[in-house]
Length: 109
Length: 115
Image (tube, rainbow over all chains, first blue to last red; front, side, top):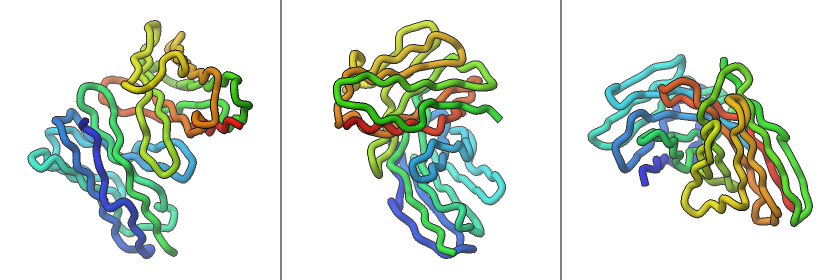
């Protein structure tokens, strides 16, 4: 299985701090994506990083990808209470999108 | 941006009945749609891949006769849970692919409760 696995499973920080979530996967990928899910809601696509890219930025989000270690990290800078959600990494190999178990981020005001 | 709409967002039904969930891409044509199931505090499990005009491809362990998927047009895919049982209670999410870059757009999900 090429399923991504995030760590930590849960992360609680104070507003203004940075949040770092990691994702590891097992097989070769075409790209890796990070999604956000508010409780009981659908998913929102955050950022996509291709297998030939090492780092990507989008607003307060920074994603890195290390294909040699089969790992990725998502950094949220200057976190806000509204960032509280579950974050999933998803890998795309042969077209299918496979999700990890997610990191539940809580940002305390 | 692209929007995927799911309906209904919540449905409660009696055991033994069938429930249909719709997934629509509102402003783009989706040749491929995916259906996921999410158990409480768990990740999303891919159930099936739906291609317009052809039979859906089901993941291992997913009963195709129980979870009927139809993708009759480029903007609509439906998931029908047949003869629903309480263990089918779950959060079902669809997604639709726009373009070939692998980026998907997700619906808001449908919470099914089978009594």
